[in-house]
Amino acid sequence: MKIFKNKHKLQKAILNQKNLSFVPTMGGLHNGHISLIKKSKKFKGKNIVSIFVNPKQFNNKKDYSNYPRNLNKDLSILKKLKVDYVFIPNKRKIFSFKPKNNIYLDNFSKKLCGSFRKGHFEGVLNIVNRFLEIINPDRILLGVKDYQQLHLIKQHIAKRKIKTIVVKCNTIREKNGMACSTRNKLLNKKQTEIGSKIYHYLKKIRKKPVYSINKMKEIIKNFGVKKIDYLEVFSLKTHKKTSLINKNSKIFIAYYLGNIRLIDNF
Ligand code: PAF
Image (cartoon, rainbow, N blue to C red):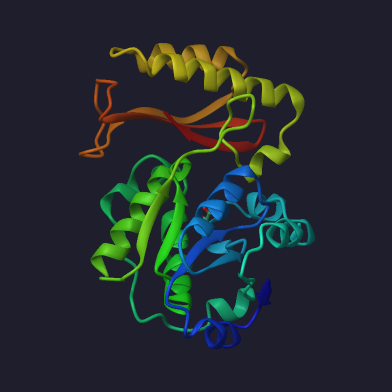
């Protein structure tokens, strides 16, 4: 496993790689990341993982400083997985060059997380655009748990005619049903139990065609959730609210357990 902090040295090493699979991360690696990395190894060629806690996608300074970081542990996980290349850029340098492409921000960025986290998706696309330019991977693997992020990166890649293919990967869940997330590391036992209840409840609701958002919110609040940023059903075709739960729609939720913000979709 080769670790690079400098983009020029990385670029020199991967210059002749014809088949490169890229998994971007902010570290704090969990089973979701591990599954993306294992999937990336199924493709021919080499794989590369980036670790960078991107300040530009945090709309809250405290959330950025509290974000779990454990580089040594992450590196030992990546070594065990036999990752070929790891890129750990320096905060100042990664933002110091002007990328060839400017970011394309689809309208979907204004909805759901976009309406609660100002500048979040601009921040995500800013860094992903830089990574794509530096690494020029053949494919990028992204999880459906971050559905909006996945869609917006896909749109950016299409509009800017970038040759990278987006590989959409299923949400990986903890034994208790909660979607794997680096932020789960910050939860206490009680909060984890509430997260698990929400999962079981929404999984059940998913099977019912008709629903009442207010009723659902009330039930989730009764589990002990103080704040729900949103709980909506969106059509996957139009990315607009819909009154029907079916195979063409998804339930999206963002909620707080204490001051930890979690998202999921069903
Ligand atoms: O999903 C994440 O961890 C981040 O948003 C990403 C894609 C690595 C960009 O910082």
